[in-house]
Length: 590
Ligand code: ZN
Ligand code: ZN
Image (cartoon, rainbow, N blue to C red; front, side):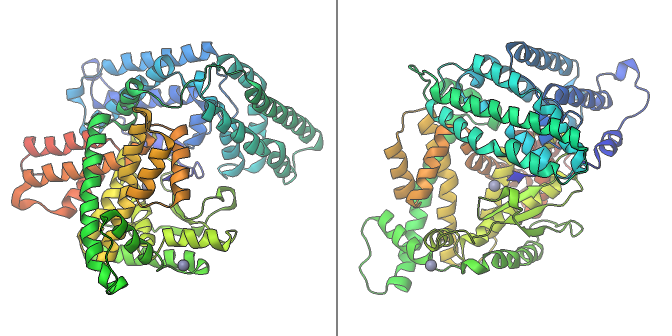
């Protein structure tokens, strides 16, 4: 999911709208109302400490600041984390509401994660990509949350920190990972245009006085030179003992714990994914055997089941729309999916919050396909957009390969995943929960897991008319999530090399060579992130099984889905705790 942060209208309303019960007497200072008040203090401090993050979340008070990555500032961050951990320790968790309890865990995890990142992970030493500050400048330039002139003045003030920022960065970097060094060089040289060119272009559209504009432009040029200088410094760095891009098993387990927040360990998830792949292969082979005569007549069936599956997939993939109809086909799917969800009673859709399908805005361009843009936590009433990229700039060969990937079957699965009942529906439910903490520390594993779970739920309830083609293509799609997990763990906690990885992705997950190569690139510059899809899916399926058992005859799918979504974007293990606790303490289910 791709978050875009829209105008800040409601920060004040949301802040004052939080329940505050007036006078709090000393005995109650550990209770829910006191904790809710603490959350606001916590967020004020968090944003002051992390201005770039604040800007990204749509909180614009500190837009003009850029935190210099000095050792002193890292110490300050560790101090902040420790203070917050001490503060939450004062609250008695048994006195907190179910929702506050989850907030408590999220804050605790975030502060521990931050401490661990600075003291153990130390990315600021080995990952030069840590220092890409250009993205926030692009947000200030492109997001229309305030008049252009005022955003450009913030941009100007923020640039004042750039020289110190990169001076400190150069002091911190030591034995950097080669892949991350190269990526940082690309990101800085690719992104510098925002400061060198786009900023000046935008200035011309304002009535800022000429003399002031000149100062602003001068600083932009100086800043661009600093950024290019940093890229040149990275290129020239003498790096005889670079750190490996592999995270290593110990750091991996810890990062997984903080990032994924699963009830399972990374090793357990890897084992489950390995089993899942075997299961999916068996099912795919059965479906392919059924489909063979329809597409290949009397032709002899390949004896190797992976070859058989691949041939059937290749043939079905030729059923796709023309490039010119791509957006139109996606637009037409939305009402169909909505009607299906409602008619089957899978969950209640909020008709007052329609999803807006739009052409991908120019500044996001580059990635074709479709993605969700959700309103940020400070503007929950903003529109959700389903962005559809254009294939207009693709060569015919590239467009054909892309359209085969998003063929008539997978294009539907894409919309299920991104929109209905996937990310878009989950988001509208999450926005009904008043907790800012859950939006800001939203758990990506739950978010992606829900979208993957939603795909299977739709098919299990008859979407696609139980067609074996649809099921087969979903399995191929699903193998991407499964193999993301296998790949990430094998590479970062083990020693899987590029050849082995490409072989697995092309041969066992039926991916195109280009897709597999891109995935390899991604796994060398990120870690743990790729686990979220399968982990979240597995946790939700497990929770539904437990819930089903618990409910007996009263079990109802709609009831499960809506209850599950009502807790916001929280880690599944805490939703589980809340859902199952409700059952035992309140058997009337109220
Ligand atoms: Zn997703
Ligand atoms: Zn074709």
